[in-house]
Length: 97
Picture 1: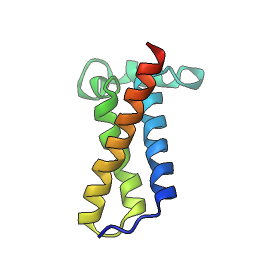
Picture 2: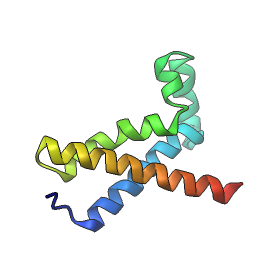
Picture 3: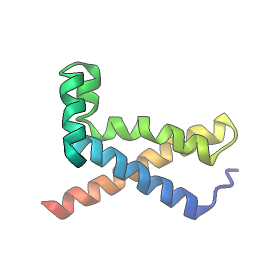
Picture 4: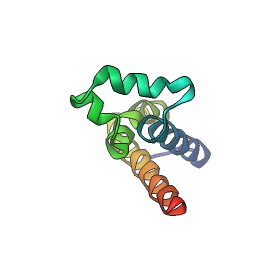
């Protein structure tokens, strides 16, 4: 059974959502993200920066590592954090439409 403080999980899910959203949907402060997109071009890394769902998977890895000790719990938490961020992304898209 995974023993994670719910506050830590929610904060990590919010952080994953915010970082993923910043990198995939915004230009960032001082157009930093735009510069990264130009640097990576149209290749794999460039297309990765345009996909919120892809980014949330990669960005949630260190947060899951922070929350869990074992690889089994970490894998489940990794996917749950990404899923939580994707849920928040879906809610935020509906608010803007």
